[in-house]
Length: 476
Ligand SMILES: Cc1cc2nc3c(=O)[nH]c(=O)nc-3n(C[C@H](O)[C@H](O)[C@H](O)COP(=O)(O)OP(=O)(O)OC[C@H]3O[C@@H](n4cnc5c(N)ncnc54)[C@H](O)[C@@H]3O)c2cc1C
Ligand SMILES: NC(=O)c1ccc[n+]([C@@H]2O[C@H](COP(=O)([O-])OP(=O)(O)OC[C@H]3O[C@@H](n4cnc5c(N)ncnc54)[C@H](O)[C@@H]3O)[C@@H](O)[C@H]2O)c1
Image (tube, rainbow, N blue to C red):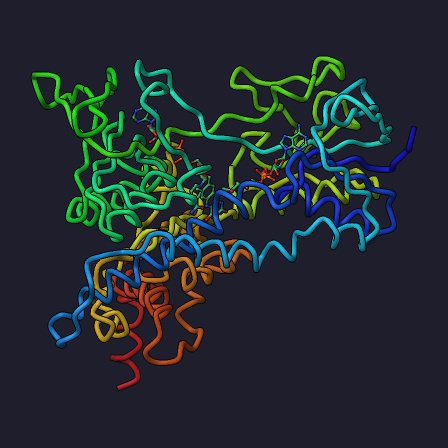
């Protein structure tokens, strides 16, 4: 049996970070991946294809908006060409995650399904057994499919199949108004589908600040039908498509919608079921996520879990950050603790949504003494010249000006709000951004404007104005 310092089960964002990091430090590393090629959900069915599709959809929408300048665009979208372009992005990035690249880094790559045989042994495809001093589980998650009568029988798509469709569904029902549902709903609507989003709660993007949710509701409802507090009862086959029967709190009667395709985006389920965790006594929570401590160790100290599988924050950059920490703890023996307090995320709708730290509701719930500063993008010149003034920046600080939360909606907000992450992470006060020189007229001036709002409040409220008034009188 081959012996390793570290065995990694699952070659996605988390697992690849661990494998590359551990091998570059000289560890003897094995990586087990069940698919032909590593890369995981993000590369094959997640971030990469979704962002590529969103970009094409946005370009098509922009092109269609050029009518007023005399530019006319055909209504017919060649979906095969769209998906070919999406695939090009995957193939380009695949090179970086390629099994052979990892072999060159010194990692033994096993293509097959990994499962525990004991606390230190992992069996691949029910055959070869390898031994690891430390083991990292990074097997990710897959779509959660609710058990709705008629759903399976009548067929549906998920993020695992949407990027291989060859025909644009004329009428699409998106089940679930989380980030996956909303990013895809908007992209498909912009490509030309007639989209209905069915969300069981009272709004889309439930993890966002309330102001963000409200504005996104307004933006999205111009492009698609949004049904809230909605509950799909059953699905059946109709003469011209799939008929979805549902109840909506506001309507007294059950309503039925006929569509050509259903995209299920109702959350995720962790890939723990095939791991034979019982053979290593690794514990999971009631949803199947692997329980970890702040050092990302499971209840079995030499077994770690990173990425979607631990259910903390299901993002690629979090899986990467956790992977780096595990390399230090598992291979070098450090005892680093994970800190999620400065993790931002971005929802790639149009306009983009940026999220960092506490929402205003969370600050209230925690009983914090906070201030909120909000600047509308119509006050920022670059958004005016871009004709893209829908959006705002909202920054929540403690009374000393330290950032507790930062939220934005706006064109490319995910890029220009990075300044807020830097400030929060390095404990700079919001006011300090005011003194950073921003080239005119850039988008991140929106953050500077919000910092200016902080100073305005400081200068015009409290004791400072009185002191200044006296000083100026004396100086005269
Ligand atoms: C549509 C969509 C869009 C997204 N967009 C973004 C985004 O824009 N930004 C962002 O930060 N996040 C995004 N995410 C989330 C992101 O994709 C995940 O958080 C990330 O992929 C998690 O990485 P991971 O390493 O935990 O899992 P994965 O990347 O899924 O990797 C797990 C790997 O383990 C393998 N595996 C599973 N079981 C076994 C086994 N028993 N043996 C061997 N191998 C196994 C799988 O084949 C897979 O390769 C998106 C997700 C989706 C679905
Ligand atoms: N841009 C990004 O970073 C990005 C993009 C996509 C996904 N992701 C990650 O993937 C994770 C999963 O995304 P998701 O959108 O699948 O999950 P989610 O859990 O965030 O959202 C699922 C939504 O579906 C609704 N829902 C659940 N069951 C339902 C039902 N039967 N009928 C109607 N609505 C139902 C929920 O109320 C919720 O609003 C996210 O939390 C995020 O971390 C990130």
